[in-house]
Image 1 (tube, rainbow, N blue to C red):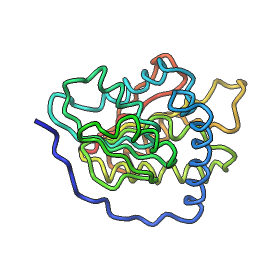
Image 2 (image 1 turned 60 degrees about the vertical axis):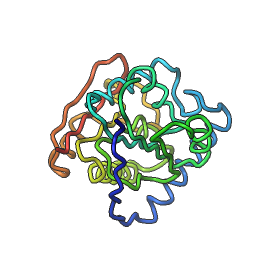
Image 3 (image 1 turned 60 degrees about the horizontal axis):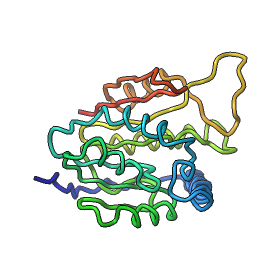
Image 4 (image 1 turned 30 degrees about the vertical axis):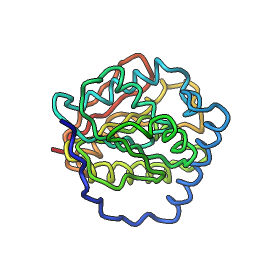
Length: 226
């Protein structure tokens, strides 16, 4: 039995010109990465496969794999999550949609996984369907040279859209701020867990779990919308 394909469309939401330009800038950054490194962890700006998959472990704690489900993978890159799902959840019935800002990423994903049943990809800022769950791994980490307020507008907009398009919930991760007096990297975005937990609870009306301490300086939010 396969997961039902959910055809409900997300209502369009206006994105201001600043976010549109920022989406194009981020797309260019990751297009350059995958052009230089190919469909590898380095091609999506991760250091190695083990840490990439450790993030998948945390994000997927949101999902109930005991029954058919639909899953939106926001910032899917070349589709690495599909390889992990095949390895760790081989018998699960998953209707998967991968979405990425970079058309080059989507080209690689279709080449690698385009023949997989119940699998589709879109080159877009956001998915165009409602699914049971949505996940996003690392999409908020690299803010480039953008002002903090602009980047946090993108984060809030993305969380809002993920909430609207996820029946059961969504999961995202963030970099933990380094200790006081420690060096920060200006191009990276750090946020205390309480900041976006509170946002999801008070603005999006969700129930939130925080997963810290899995061996990296980051945390994962499991946001339950139902």
